[in-house]
Image (cartoon, rainbow, N blue to C red; front, side, top):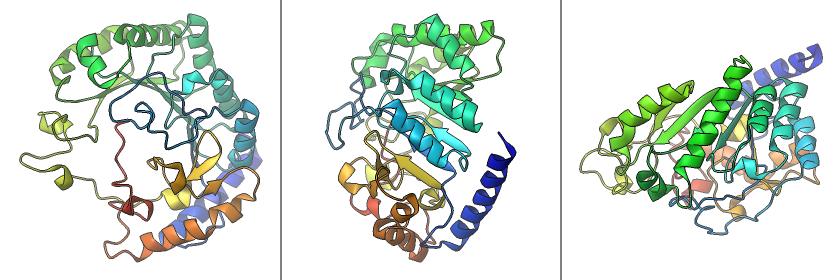
Amino acid sequence: MNIIHKILKTINYKLVNWQMSKKHSIVFGKPYFLALDTTNLCNLECVWCPTGQKRNTRTLATMAKEKVFEIFDKFGPYLKEILLFNWGEPFLNKDIIEIMSYAKKKYSLYLVISSNMNVRLSYEDACKIVDSGLDKFIASIDGVTQKSYEIYRKKGSISLALDNLKILTKAKRDKKSKTPEIVWQYLVFKHNEHEIEDAKKLADEIGVDRLEFSKPWCPTDWASTIEQYSNYTANKSDKEYKQKEDYCNWLWNSIVINSNGSVSPCCSVEDEKEDFGNIFGQVFLKLYNNKEFRTARLYNKNRKDGGHMNRCTVCEHIGTCNHKCN
């Protein structure tokens, strides 16, 4: 990171956080967190995913690397972190490794990617991923047997996913690299909770850096019966789930860009018609302070609950913020 980028990041970070603390409806800083979906295509048909279930609420697209680089050059000097995933499988974008390398090496920011691990990974590609400087690689694998794994990950192959995970960890070991942190993410459902201990043993054998058991937002009949892995308490209905109280900062410090350039107020907006504009063809601050963004910020500021993230302007008619299973 050159000194100019470092100064810009610091000034922008302080400005945005100050405006966020005041809940200003107009923001003069640029977001320091970017969620960018370079493709919303997916090779699986996961049960609670709008992409996998082909609900067609978004334009199917894969962003050209030149467009991605344009976005990085627009926000790179101000960014602290990038998530290179949202609605699709990022490795279906043939340029994804080059994209990772560009972002990391030019702007020295924290870079995260998540994959269903069902796009075959060669050892050579795994080495390139390690060399890219990627900080965190999330491998979404929910089970250790095909029987339980495919209940949610429809059309997925557990053997392919685990083989890819082994190749990636081998490449990291061979290169004696500290990065990326390889995280095996395991969504715990009722149908795969019995494989938790086997997953722990397998994770040790493969050599991942961390095995993370996550609580998916799903119907109660899918939820784990183990309390620590469930978002539901005993005898509660779907509408009476436990939800973490926290402030919604997305509207002030973040930008979510979809594969066709459309901009969402947060990463959970499923329907393209709920987006607030398009990143291409207009001045960013004009987009970021348009009527939709200003209204949403004012709504969060003026809510009687103090602006907690339980509900927001968009979520008034699409459900809770955390509706995705991931």
